[in-house]
Image (cartoon, rainbow, N blue to C red; front, side, top):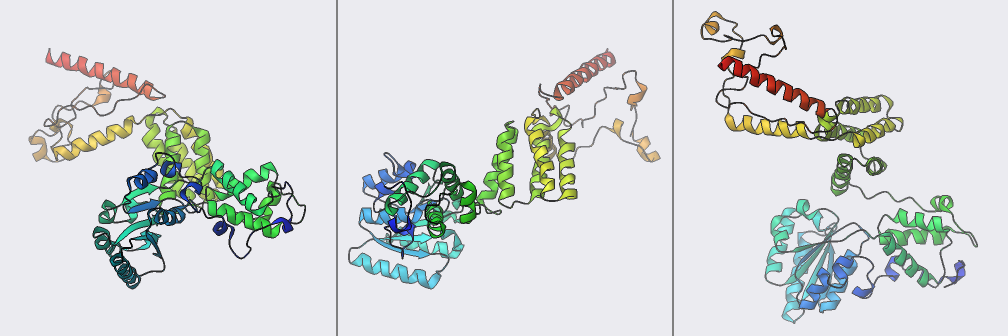
Length: 439
């Protein structure tokens, strides 16, 4: 392959997209998905057994779902029928099912590939069940959305879900070299621009080949692109991110866990990714406030006020200036001492409150605003804590039906170390006063 790029060196069919020209002709040519197609992979084991059941292929765009479905049909000698849930309705499904039944009478089995299967509603999804059960079709559905949320239980119970992963840097480089081999020339990119190109593809092989075509259409003879000139030639690809679906939940989960795991660099990365994809900064601000209480709590009492201040600062400054305030909160929370003691204590207290109903608090700590209530003993014997030498009476405040409970257990980190000492002090004082009163 020539090291120099020239337009007249291209030997491709200009009428066909590069992705179509490079479409694998066998499963061995598929790039990526080694957990499915490599030695001992799930699909390899299925094919070796001679039996292929219905499948749901779940993964991002450009990872080979359609190609693999087509090659599976070739491998087992089935007819390949393809429909898209975006453009098909009940009438189209009936025609496909009837054709599959007719072909079955002739001894031909059908692999029905349904692209974007999550776009079918529940009733349409149910229509697949009879033809799957009687063997009319082997269904292979493709979806970019989490099947657990988008497909009904009956369909999932009759199918095996296979997860397709985004292509890694090595996979994308392999695909790029394959494209250059077809072109008969190296792309006119510096090493840094080549790495930028792979990053722009965001794990999507089809997108990578589309970017290559943009370069082919735009580059001048003898021109070599650096990262800056590359970005001026190709259209920046929007990150794969649906604020109502997996992209949203996956990244907010990653952000939360990296803050909990005290990794400010990883936390900033996921925070920046979400903003870059168009996430509402105030949603992130709300989640940071929640993290301050759930994962830090009283180990650092400043975490919650700072998170609230970060939200207020963003509301005052707006984007992009206010994003820095939220980034400051991200770093602070990541580096703060961690404790879920308050979170755990609250859940435990809520569980007891729910389980025990509504027992009356001890009358000693209840006010007696009327003569009748005072006559019934409300407030009798109450000790005003400030009247004691330690400002601590040691009275029992739990309902008698429940008895004394312990919910809050401070950790030995941050400010909660001091709170642990205070709790131990009051517990010793309570025990001493109880002993004195009983003696």
